[in-house]
Length: 181
Image 1 (spheres, rainbow, N blue to C red):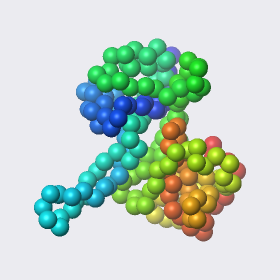
Image 2 (tube, rainbow, N blue to C red; image 1 turned 120 degrees about the vertical axis):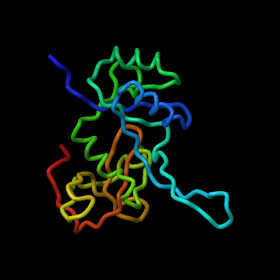
Image 3 (cartoon, rainbow, N blue to C red; image 1 turned 60 degrees about the horizontal axis):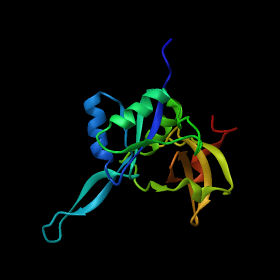
């Protein structure tokens, strides 16, 4: 019986996510790094360009069947130090993200959608929120998340291990749902 494919959050050392991604590609392992455009100086006077960079430093998601032994072996053989995020600090099980939740996150972290903010999930603990789905036609159509107020503005929050993506939206674009499945 074949194991179900899941997404595993993988933490890298300081700003080495692109190096680890190249290794994953070489190994034939599907992965995802949330990216964003950043304005960078070109070195020529008065010129800047948009460069695609990782939006959440030191975090990659790997798509594979869940196997804790494989995770330990992969981490020991990787060319740079990497760490799979654990469900519990002293536990042996690693965090997993379902295919549906990852597709929702990938949809919302499309670098062509401007204004996405990434914050530490801990900053939202205790915030009042309502589960919603975007029903207005456009690039966010179908996205599910938690509608909340943060920093004086309204956002849909899509939570993942280690980070939360915040998308600025109007409540009129959303419908309330029972819960985020």
